[in-house]
Image (cartoon, rainbow, N blue to C red; front, side, top):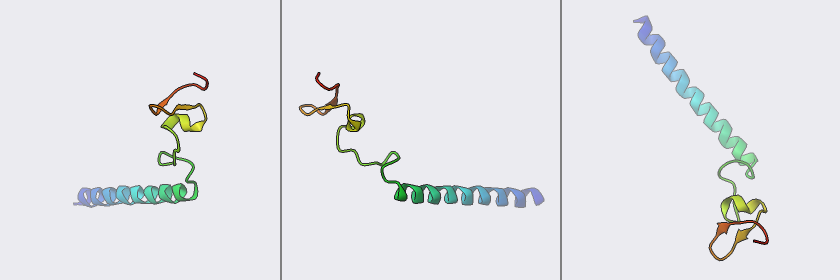
Length: 65
């Protein structure tokens, strides 16, 4: 019976830990919207950082090429 109780408490603790980590990540993402995978990209993904995009087909390319 003690193994059952320990298992239930352990699973519950892991779930609570996951919820805490998720809330901390959401709070961090709310304070720093420029970071992370959900940042606003005004260009074509990787090119929005300044490497240049081809406006005709929205593909990434080098400047001047």
